[in-house]
Amino acid sequence: MTADTRNPHSPHPPYETAAGHGADAPLVLDRRDGPHGEVVLRRHGELLQIIANGCFLMDTSDGRSERLLVRAALEELDAGGGRPSPAVLIGGLGVGFSLAEAAAEPRWGRITVVEREEAVIDWHRDGPLGEVSRGALADPRVRIAPEDLLAHLTGGGPGNGEPYDALCLDVDNGPDWTVTEDNGSLYTPAGLAACARRLAPGGVLAVWSAQPSRAFGEALRNAGFTRVRTEEVPVARGVPDVVHLATRPA
Image (cartoon, rainbow, N blue to C red):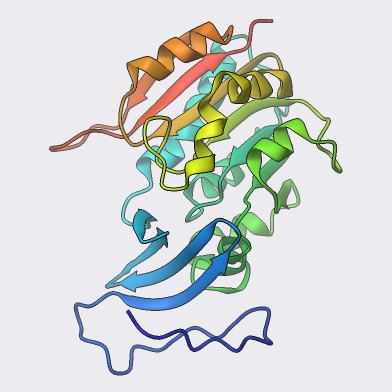
């Protein structure tokens, strides 16, 4: 990794060049220290990668499961009878695949993206991750809420009292293992209750996970959700990414 060469007085620091780096070495584009630890944006070949607290979090290599997160939520709404211009919350901006999927679907109405890391928002608005999200960010349906997801679900800030028809949550690595310890609170009974309260009756909760979790399925049922199931993304080998789906009773 390279040294941090940011200008501390610039709100959007310049990104580093590849000068002096080996062709196969990941190149650090930006590094920030925030209230939840260090986040790093790297380029490795054609891929952009986000590293959180020294752990690989996500990259731009695929995006099938992140897109499935949004697409499956809409399909589940349709299976429950559908509704016009449903409002969706995307929890976690990440590398932007879920947002791009939502903005590409004209049926969605209000699209709110909650992201607590200012650096990630910057990387999309005027940095390299704009490759994925620039068109979506220009969509008038899209609003970025720069706050903690659980605070958004339980708080009373602007727009925070409006119900959603779908919550599409991609926070950390999912319910079984988190890089940032306090992210785990989202998957507790209290966190799931907060999700249920922000959903309209018949609304859908979709949760991305790096691996299937039978225990989380039971937690969803215990929280009062119905039609609990999972969708897997096929992989050639290894453990598949999954989307947990559940519905708030009407």
